[in-house]
Length: 601
Image 1 (cartoon, helix red, strand yellow):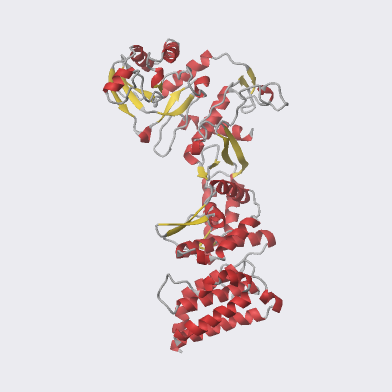
Image 2: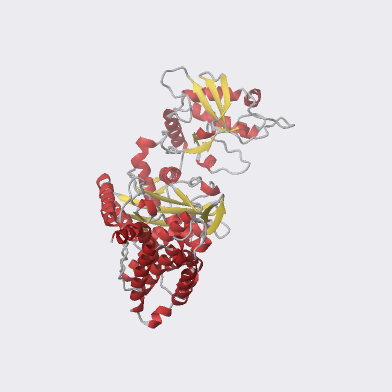
């Protein structure tokens, strides 16, 4: 019960600050016990005596409202006569639906006449008793009726405003915290529940017979429940129990608080990737870094150089550590709906914030590479999945990777587990990004190519560190004793030579067209590329450029020749991408400076 306990403690810690309060910075409020969020369609305004003042369609931007619910009405489905206590659908507010109308008024009157009554209840009850809701809404042009006089949209939700005339009083019923507390106290007074040990709160308390739905509402999962055992047939208990309470006992109060906290967290902090919702939070409301994005955020104003990256990353870690108490916890969870009615917890972890921050730091310290104008960066996790398994789509002359939702959610969870639990970079992901980065000719856009190369090098750097404790340098090493690395450098030089001879940026170089062959048969492909360059492009270079490239190619060939002959014929390892990327960057950065120095001599 780790998840439910942490959610329950989160609610208890933040209840006074957030429960029932609407804040601009939050998508949804934290719902009080015995309440839920509903999307209201129509707003009816009354005075204190129940006289109609106005009716209007609800602003869609503020349609999510808090309404009181009973345990049965919160879980109702289909054509039921189980009414909500105050705000409800049109069909419960008109005598044209006698059974539903009677159920609504009976429940409202019981609350109104109890010791926990509230002035707003009197106004709503007097108005609904008149039975004119449909006629009034039709006069305001808010509804349409069919030939039988029934509303065409009978399930439209109605919420109430009561203008009492008292200064400072909240007219909206869905924002009045005194009304919330009135129903909480009233509903608790009406319950005669079985008491038992609650596995969430650790106390003996009145048990819940049903548990809330609408926890994670993304991707049509609104009706999915985390806890459910609603029948005693159909192999529900699989022969292990004779009663649902033998499996788990959760009190009504703990169930309400834990589920409401999870809904609030999912709505305001949840990250939905591929249809799976990922949460990372602190039970005391302390802000934590996101688990799927780089620990150190990108800055267009500051390019992090190789020599400064570790220092900047350490400063980011210290900054988080100074803001967060070391003895607090971080909770990570992932939710997915197995069916439309069942919500599954696909990943769960708890660890101290100090460990959590260090693990994010350690991942980014290794899984990183040059990222264009931003300098050294760690890629987003969904960018890794997209570059590894996504399908390239061209839309409006822009290339982007689209990844199937099933693949995205599974692979993101694997990477989050690796990042948070100090796991190794999966070999299949490393192979996939290497294959994608070794076939750049199918990617027409230069920006997308750079993204793929950056992501591949970062992933492969982490992969080699995890397997061999080998940390690859992000600065060019001309004397690196690695034949694949040196062949990668040679490919970058071949590409740059050809690009120096024409102005058409959309024209593909021979080096990139033969990259896939080059990776499998480097000696054969390099000979073909070089012959093509000497025949068609090398003569067009200036004398200073020829001298520069002759010297550079000679240095690389010398390094390659020192390797055994059989290694020169073998397919390249993924490390050739390191040499290619770094040599390419070095050529664009320093070639002009070196040529100028040679001309001066």
